[in-house]
Image (cartoon, rainbow, N blue to C red):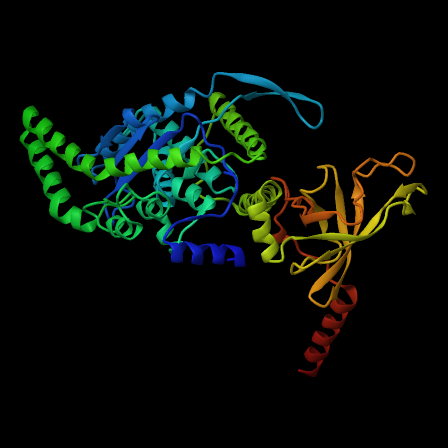
Length: 507
């Protein structure tokens, strides 16, 4: 945790009120998100109990499983949930547009992408578990399931995989969205409790934050926001209701079955509806926060990913995702996630002065005033051409931990501006950083106006997230790096052989 983040939490704790830590909302918030609140029995992570789902506050639909331990009832529940989910997803699989790629080629892409909102990270894991359970099911043969069940499983797995990548917006936990913008006076673990986070940010009317926090911990006043129910609720209320439902099913009387199911439905509804209302209150709070400029670009990447997976599903030959990654797949995933984190952090700092200050306090960025400029400096390139390479010295009071040669970008300069650190010298309480401009400054005969800093100008810099080259991974017909043997050195081989022969002769 950086100094700014720690100070924000201390301030929130002392004032008993959440403190904004960003100026913008760095995720796209859909005008029509699908809110999903999954619920499982405590200690039964693989057995869904209920799901409340809907794209409007007044149109929530509660789906329950009468007996969570019964596989047939679980897959009927999955089919009902799948019908709702696929209807929502298919709304985004109609309108397409042509876009230009970097290679000046044209490709078709959906104009928008779905957005699923769950209360916390546990909700994402629950949907991921449900996807793994459903995507391998067969629609024919022994124990067949409706066709929507494996289709739902593939889509839930894709959405859960996308949620691992920083900056995406297709499947999000609302607690993460809230704590990205506000700092609370509690731990990060407690920040996964939606009621607690909302108590810090927007407590109910005529209720103090202290009382709202106590209510958030009370399972009677604020039932758990999922994914697990309260064990006390399970023992005292849920288990008797499930037993009554099982008894009615064994009796075979339709009226008794309907009555028992309705009682179970109402009981679970009392547990899940407070969270449903709280979710829409949180969405209203987040909608009031202005969206960051670069969130649009990240949303375009979501649309591209959604289009690619949708087109693959439409081929008719789509296979379920692997149960686990192979070696190359795991390495590719890790590389993609690392790059996404770096890019997202850089985008936030580029857009948001609050985030930039946070990174400056940790030595991951710096800002200061220009003290000297060598604007007309030229060097000879490898092709024996004169190229403009201005240098300037910037004095900063920030901690400077970036190494020499680090490629930099600046929110204070044009987007084409590129530079790198040449040297850093400490001068009492400040540092003198020598920076060379490497891009966006024009040519010696036609320099770009405003692309070269001037003396007295205040600038901020942070590392360029795209400075690393993309790794090359083995193809399907190539051996893994763990199975490649190097050619032995002849001298070492001969020496080993001679030693062996000598020992043999001695014996």
